[in-house]
Length: 62
Image (cartoon, rainbow, N blue to C red):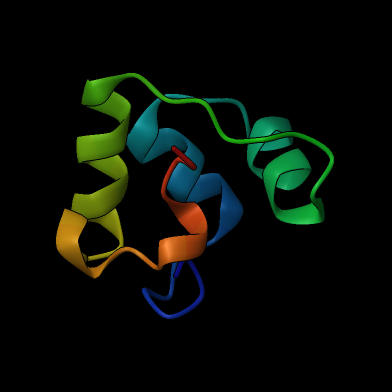
């Protein structure tokens, strides 16, 4: 989604308030994303996706 939105890791990190190294770990599968509601809203806005459009693979498992 970051690439589709034409954002660098640095730009996305700045928009959601996390370190670039955090984005790198998420993308390499070394860490699971954990975001506050504010960060999630920032992420969705940055990649121009609404919550309903998130891939099921990103939603929590019940």
